[in-house]
Image 1 (cartoon, rainbow, N blue to C red):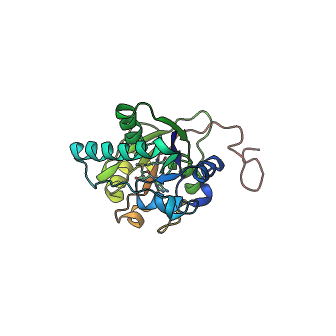
Image 2: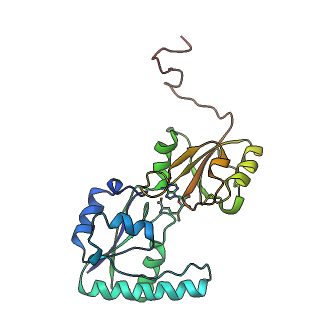
Length: 235
Ligand SMILES: C[S@@+](CC[C@H](N)C(=O)[O-])C[C@H]1O[C@@H](n2cnc3c(N)ncnc32)[C@H](O)[C@@H]1O
């Protein structure tokens, strides 16, 4: 039997993919690592099909290893009798708890088949939510910026885990970046915020990201000179 890692997308239930929904309909048990992913899954599966896994709120590697070992045992047990899904927000292979499960299963239950159903990741959903276009020919780097961190270097960066937006903003602005923030994008729970003012997202909320772009980068696009009225500015 198979363990499916199913990406649920950023949080609105209708952004679950058709394939993701099909798998959730078909499996016997659905496990989730947290409250938000559980509530999205709940839109597609009855409460009775949701399994329980216990994840401690800790960064202690020993406690985490033990918790994942137990979780993998539970999931492998269930997969002996039927197909199961482990759901995560976004995509299961992008900064996701699913990686821990996959590694632990592969170490202790190598006979269990694992398949991944990709999901709409915040890495791509941010662009629509923040009104950003990543043009062909340009680069985009993914970084973490927790606790006021401010990585620099690339022209364009998406920053996850922005937990002190004000401190991050100060440093990035000084380093020559324009920054926009997105909180709880395409999410049913909590308030969605899109802003360039870091004080709007000063309160700590894990589901906050930022897009940072170096000021003054060149745009070499055939259509860049058209304005919204359809006239060619340079004509
Ligand atoms: C551990 S990563 C998980 C990423 C997820 N697997 C994905 O593919 O989108 C969590 C970080 O992603 C960002 N994030 C995920 N979903 C988000 C959303 N709906 N709105 C804003 N930020 C989000 C936040 O920066 C958060 O701290």
